[in-house]
Length: 221
Image (cartoon, rainbow, N blue to C red; front, side, top):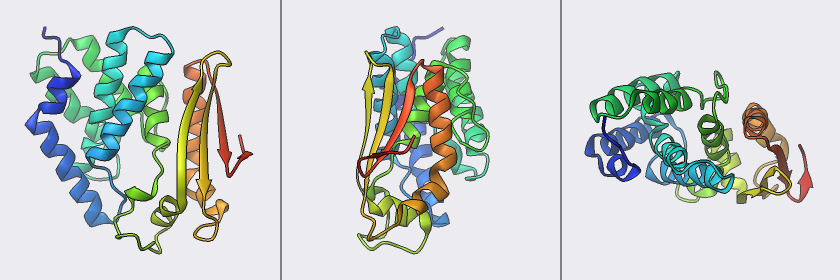
């Protein structure tokens, strides 16, 4: 079996094509950015969480790989993209010679990152969930600075700042968001993100952390 590294994954032209084409599918469907900026951020946040929590270096790297691969299933369809992506990742990683147990760990994390069906089945899955669901930012909107009528665009465009902070000593993880309420009322955020925040709470539990959401300086969860 080969030791497949994050660098191997990041440089793989097939994977990079899947990420690019998946984002094009979502663009055509009216979704926010899911390309290299998003997956690279998810890879970094997920791996850094496990690193700060003291997990072994290889698990940290597997979280980084899962974060980079997690949205390739969108090239098939947005619906059930977590499961499609898990199957695609299984084929890619197996062909690259990755150890079967590591393949399973990554595939289950990818297959459990979408809030419709997700369960934080492992620390890597939990870290991926927290990284993915915390990526709310104006730059994900594709409309050249003009907020669209779609609620997902409106919410992302209204977010002036978002930050995920881990306090290892207090065993607490906090997502702090600043929303311009002239562009979007806070209730719109909850309309589309409540299920995601509840999933983040469960992901925090998996990691032994208390998840907290702070919007415009006010603790919500």
